[in-house]
Length: 529
Image (cartoon, rainbow, N blue to C red; front, side):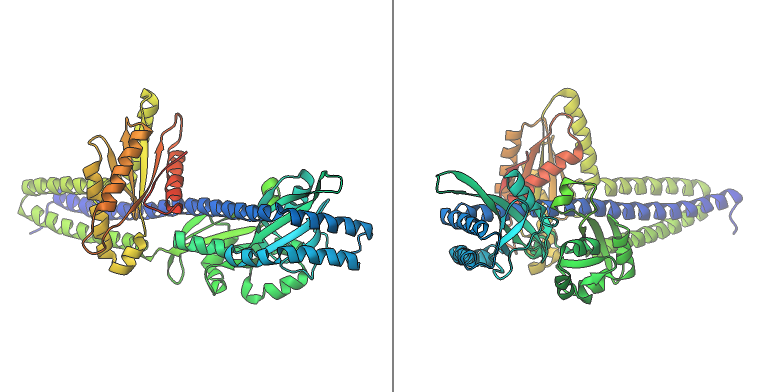
């Protein structure tokens, strides 16, 4: 039995609609993954810069601790005066004697700093400029001038203020903190002697980042930057073929054989093109991002070229598998729907019309649910909770009310997945969502922000009430015993919305508070400022 022309047109229309449905859903899911990758990239850069600042501050504090020793101050001043009396001759026995005395006075504390605090360099400099007086880490090397390389030292001696940041010296690139050194002379006057620098490498910082972000990180320095600053013989010894790629030297990486990875065509092209964030397919599927690395001098003068590039990537196989699974599910769903509709068409025009309307209605309902709710926890998904937050922020600004936001993160959740498996981890996430919903009020909104993170929006809620609510949730979670894993704790960041504030600014403050809670030991509530 042949179909009438109207039925043929309807069938053709249904087929085209199914194809469009599959295509739209596929590209929507793909774009969602790309959006997630762009946000992830911004987070990587933000956290990297925070840790770099924290490490430089730590080096500055160590330098300040050593420079506050009156015996160190006195010996440094005597050495400077002796050098001046000998016409700047570092080889003079009296000058060598004073340098040795200063070295012996800090040798024991230097050994402890190097072992406990990852200090790689302790360096006394004479001003003006940057004239090496004593490298405690390498006492046999001294007397060289580094004015065109060590701007942290030059500025500390010139402005008599502490400096800090990433900088490439003659021997190595490091994170440095510098303080001016003063001493009391024989006339009981406080005089400026020079500067003291404490420095470390990127290795420890990258190790912390690797554990925190679960991503691989590589520091690339441009060949122009390295060759402008470092001694040629050191470059030849340090940056062998294994640590050289097109236009860059590999300074440090969390991956041992990183050159093999970085020199693959798509990866190398992404680095060369300064690609900020994307999904890259090469020997696997990776979320990839890169961002510029400025040294201390470049941070003061943005017109200077970047010192290098920070490259970060992580395995995205699971995320990409979800995209592909979504495509397969939509295809299967569309085929099943098409078959059902075609069967209905054969039974009669009116029956087929009613049946088609029912299917379309059901599909729309399911799509709306998929669009707004997280499939695992049944909480609002990321997109839906962001839309609600944007709406509540508009209402907050329009009616001069209160608005508090809370960002939760399960502590050591990766360990739960690794130890008990993802099925147990999923049960923990679902139970966590249930616990949150039992504590929050009817007019509050709870959503899954991503992974093991949850976001709560508390409209008409002052900050102190929001903190109390967060503490109740944290306590409820800490006292609940999961069947297989026992207790699991939450770290929480809480922020109130400020007048005229943008959504990403509010989220960033709340995320910073969450990061601070993690840093302070987890199972804490911290307020974003």
